[in-house]
Amino acid sequence: MKFQSTYLQGIYDGLVERNGEQTEFLEAAGEVLSSLEPVVAANPRLEEEGVIERLVEPERVIMFRVPWVDDAGKVQVNRGYRVQFNSAIGPYKGGLRLHPSVNLSIIKFLGFEQIFKNSLTTLPIGGGKGGSDFDPKGKSDREVMRFCQSFMTELQRHIGPDTDVPAGDIGVGAREIGYLYGQYKRLRNEFTGVLTGKGLAYGGSLVRTEATGYGLCYYTQEMLSVMKNDSFKGKTVVISGSGNVAIYAAQKATELGAKVVTMSDSNGYVYDPEGIQVDVVKQIKEVERGRIKEYTKRVPSAEYHEGCSGVWTVACDIALPCATQNELSEESAKTLIANGVTAVAEGANMPSVPEAVEAFQKAGVLFGPAKAANAGGVATSALEMSQNSERLHWTFEETDEKLHGIMIQIFHASYDAAKKYGMDGNLVAGANIAGFEKVAEAMLAQGIAY
Ligand SMILES: NC(=O)C1=CN([C@@H]2O[C@H](COP(=O)(O)OP(=O)(O)OC[C@H]3O[C@@H](n4cnc5c(N)ncnc54)[C@H](O)[C@@H]3O)[C@@H](O)[C@H]2O)C=CC1
Ligand SMILES: O=C(O)CCC(=O)C(=O)O
Image 1 (cartoon, protein in one colour):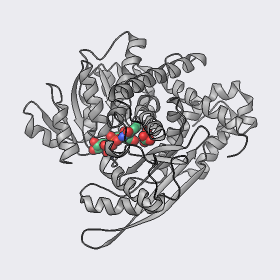
Image 2: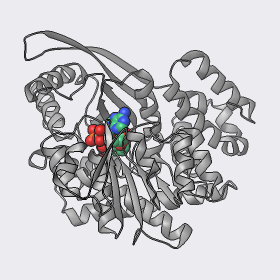
Image 3: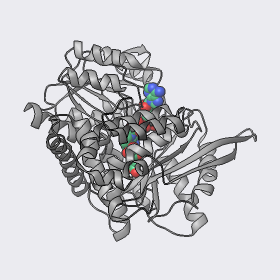
Image 4: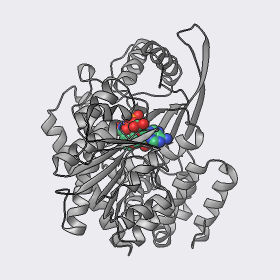
């Protein structure tokens, strides 16, 4: 990657030299560094105080063995991770991912993105992420419980309500958060807001389940309104994924007047020209933990296609990638553009490869990057932390209204930052800069502490 600034070039080359195999982390870091070119040029103190070199190196990386016993009585061993990336503006905050693909590169990219996303929320939370290569798919509830208990037995010594507050991500939902919380409480003998995404019966917040998907639609709605004087009304939307983010994005987009015609999982996708029935997907995914293919057995208007990248061949006005990183290739972006897409907003973390982002921007497609568009989940987690601290519980309406306000504010902060640095309409650069500015200010104020 080439930079105009020799300072940034040196940092990026150093990252490649030290972390050459961490392709996802380098992809995320490269994008942020290139957005920061004009900021670094305008603020020599950033170089004098080594802010960027400190920003790209995690404050702490924790890796640990997770032994557990399966239902057949056999000992299994997984690898656990927690990357505490940056605590300049608050306790480390970010989800835990359980998926066989999890490795240090993926956790570092996610933790790095989380720094800027969390800053954009305007709430006092630093950046972190964790997880394991454990695959919950096909495991019994008891196996998942034993894994979670073992994982937390080690993790508990590194986290705390004022230190590091994990939550869910791929493969970690209400069931896993419950098991993790139970084990933390047993080991530490304290009832605190150490995790978010908790059940409503034991300190969870209303709206947290819906927050990432709803927030994505609130952000997209503001982007459409400000930049195109348009809305979701009457639009055809394609969504990838059928997990937490995808389900509630589909629900809110439908509520706002759009027709969602696809959802997918890692095997394939369903196309329903009548509009996806979200309750059917919820039953299949949240209750039965089944495959999306099941949908066609219950809804006759739908077709199933093998291969998840096929969702991007379906003609649409708006595309919301909500499954996983690098799921939207350059070729898929070109197909979406040829089919008339006018807006793309990322529900998943880094779902579009850099060449796809470039293709959308060149074609004049509105593009809302993940760290802004999907920040509603972590924002509502921070609202859960506030409720836990004050030992209060807010209503659905009150929490949803706060989430809505935060997403509108995130759009405007990104839009304005891009404008300030002469990159009008570039919401990728805008989000990176707006997220960075607060973190950099806090790092400068606190000296070379980290
Ligand atoms: N849950 C949350 O609050 C937040 C999640 N995210 C991001 O949203 C994305 C989805 O997360 P969740 O919905 O929470 O997870 P989930 O576990 O509820 O669902 C994941 C979905 O992605 C699909 N998927 C996973 N790997 C895939 C692959 N290789 N190819 C195609 N599909 C695949 C799964 O089949 C499932 O539909 C992730 O990128 C996550 O980091 C971002 C912000 C917050
Ligand atoms: O709610 C949280 O703390 C985690 C959210 C998350 O992992 C994300 O924003 O990617």
